[in-house]
Amino acid sequence: MNRVHAEVARSTRNAVEEMLKVLVITPSSEELSPLLHKCGLADLTFKEKVPAKENNPGSSPDLIILSELLTNRKGLQQLDKIHPAVPKIVLSTGRNKRLSFVKGRRLSELLVNPGCRDLKDAINRLESERRLMEENISLKEEVSSLYKLIDTYGQVNHILIDRKSVV
Image (cartoon, rainbow, N blue to C red; front, side, top):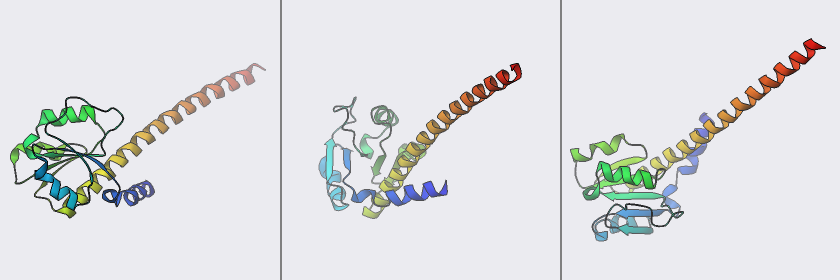
């Protein structure tokens, strides 16, 4: 398992350097745009509110960045329904107890007054978490199919033993 974890960590080390499609949900694009461009995020799509449904199925973003002003439980739950496996980062200008629920959520991160390094580290951490979750799902499916094979082998073995005792 350590080998798998090391592979995932190595492959996500520079997730920011890849061309990420980023959905930015903020009341004003001027608010976050300079920071995101400075940090190397170029493929940005801005929305002024949390979308009620996915507009373009199949063109899911790689990352969702939310302004603190538009962040609430219902909005994040709505985003989870639309984009369940997409990491979400909430950017805040100050400590806010109202946003404390973000810290306990899967694939979510709350950053207070982040610099580029903080943002890049969060993106890499969330991308690593997302890939580990995908690997976990894949391994569970593989284990399930192996259990089915073991069950089939047991049934065949039982039939062969019964035939052998009849002869």
